[in-house]
Length: 286
Image 1 (cartoon, rainbow, N blue to C red):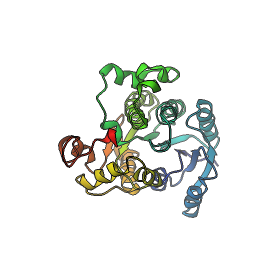
Image 2 (cartoon, rainbow, N blue to C red):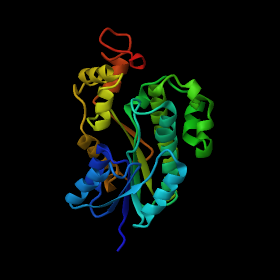
Image 3 (cartoon, helix red, strand yellow):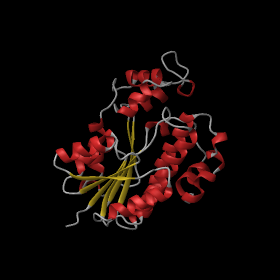
Image 4 (tube, rainbow, N blue to C red):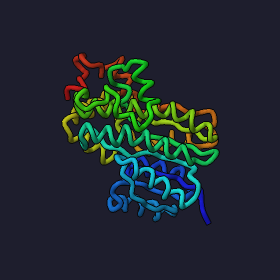
C-alpha cells in the first residue's frame, strides 16, 4: 500500500529533526549524495518507528535531482518536501556553493512543484547569511527569483570571478533560496500547495562545528555570544517552526522566509554585532 511521501534532501540534523516531527504516517524518502553516510540518520528514524528509506541524489547535478524526484514518486505521492541539503563556506568552493546551494535548490523546488500533491507543503532551509550582505538591486533580486533554472548561473553577478570568496557565494545562494521560494510559492499555489523557507542562525550541527573550527570560527562564536539569545540554537527549535508552517494551521502562510537566529541579525544591524563597533566584527574579513 502506497503512502504519502515526505521527501527529505540531505541527511543532516535539521532535516532529521523536521522528519521526526512531521514524518509520522508517511514514507520518508531521504535523498542524499552519500548514501553510506546517511545510514545513521536512516537507523535513527527506523528505530524510532518511522517508515524511511535512503536514495542517492547529488544536488549539484540536475539529472540526479530529476531522477531522485521520480524515484520518490515510486513510493507514493509527494506530499511534503524538506530541503535541508547544502554545503557551507568552509566545506566547498565558490562554484560548488553556486551549483549545490543556489542552482540545486532552484531546480529541486521546480521539479517537486511539477508533481507535488494537492494540499502539499514544502520548506527549504536557507540561512541568516542571506540577510547580512550588501543589498542587491531590485533587478538582481528579481533575476534570482525568476530566471529560468537553465540560465540562472549565467547571470553576470553570479560569475565566480565576480564573487569575492566562499562566504559571499554562500550569502548569494541563501538570498536566492529566499527569493526563489517567493516565486515558486506562486507556482506551487497553482497546484494547491504551499512553500516556505526557514533561515536559521547558528544551530549546533556537525556542519556548524566545521564553521566553528574554520577560518570564520571566532566570528560565529562572537555572534551567538552577543546576540539577544546569548547562545546557539538547536535543531528542535527549527523543527518547532517547521511544524507550524507545514501544518494545517498555516494554510495562509506561503512564500515566506522565517528568520530564526536568536536575534543575531538584529544585533548585526542595530546592536553590538554592528561591523566597525569595538564590540563587533567584520564578517567578510574573518
